[in-house]
Image 1 (spheres, rainbow, N blue to C red):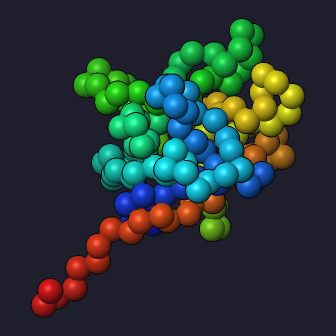
Image 2: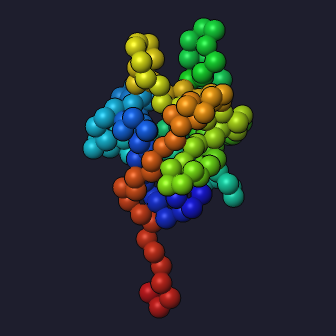
Amino acid sequence: MQLFRKAKKIRLRSVKDKYLVADDDEETVFQDRDGSSEKAEWVVYTAGKNHIRFKSCYGKYLMASNTPFLQGVKGKKVIQTELKPDLDGSVNWEPVRDGFQVRLKTHTGSFLRPNGGVPPWRNTITHDTPRRSKTREKVLWDIETVESLPSYQKGD
């Protein structure tokens, strides 16, 4: 949580130097090397003691869905969604710090994962549980603060 404590708006950059980006369809997310657009910026909200939420430029929250990315594949879709009272914690992410990077853990124990390779995997985002040490490195994200929360000092 420390990496997010003073951040109001951030960018998430994968180990492959690609940014988590909200798509224009206001539902899907993907990776892009260009992190300069507002679609790569996410407003950070605290959700309890150990969790945070990410809100896209479209006003939708980053959600770990239960929908498989592909039939018969372990990874599940990550999407943008409206904040609804019946959500089961799927918009809450627990930051797990690893040095200067972070893994973002879902309410089910899986992690936000950038995918590479050939289509249909290329530049997609899913969530699953890494089983091998090499895969564990893939779920690490760098946090780039775009806008900080105002700091308050005594006497101000």
